[in-house]
Amino acid sequence: MSIKGVRSKLCGLTRVQDIDAAARAGAAYVGFVFFAKSPRNLEFSKARELALRVPVGVSKVALVVDADNAFLDQMMASVPLDMLQLHGLESPERVSEVKARYGLPVMKALGIATAQDVALAQAYGSVADQLLLDAKPLVGHDLPGGNGLSFDWTLLNGKNWLVPWMLAGGLTPSNVGDAVSMSGARQVDVSSGIEIRPGQKSPKLMAEFVAQASGQNIAD
Image (cartoon, rainbow, N blue to C red; front, top):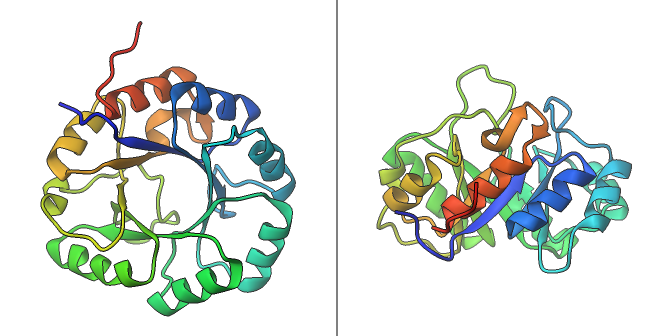
C-alpha cells in the first residue's frame, strides 16, 4: 500500500510534451540530464526551453556528473533552475563548494547496495540539502543512474536522516507502491521506469507512476 503524500520526481525529460505530461500527472520535481553519455542528455538551449515551460510550483532539477565549475557556470547562466543534483563521485567538500558558489539547494545522489553504503550516505546529510539514494551501477557501466536497477529497499526503513531523502533505482508504476512501503520513502525518483524506450517518456506511465506512488487511483 502506498503512502499518501509521497512526492515524485520525473527525471530525464527531453521534450515539451514531457513537461506538460509531468505537470498533469502531479510531479513535484522534473529532472534535466546534463551528461553526454546519457540518452537523455540535453543541450543548454533545449533545457532552457523546457525549463521555461515548467509550471510554478514544480521544482526544476539539473542532474550533473562530476561537472567542473566552468560547465556549471555556463549551465546556470543558460537554464533557470531550482536545484542541482550531483550524481557523480563528488566529495562532501565539493557538495559544500557547489552550494556556496551557486546558492541553490543541492541534492547528492549516492549508490546503495549494502548497509555500509547507507552509513556512508548518511555522512552527506551534513552538507547536502537532500539525498537521492539510488542503486549502485554495475561495474563498468557508463551511466551512474537511469539504469533500471534496484536494491534492497528495506535497508532504508527506519533510518534517521539529517535531511529529506528520495528513493531511486529501478522504480516503475508497478513496484513503486511496494518500494515506498518497504523503504519508508516520502519522495521517489524515476527515469527509465516511465519510458517507452531510452529517452522517450510515456505520458500514461508518468501518470500511473505518480498515482501509484501517492496511493491514488486513476481512471483507465
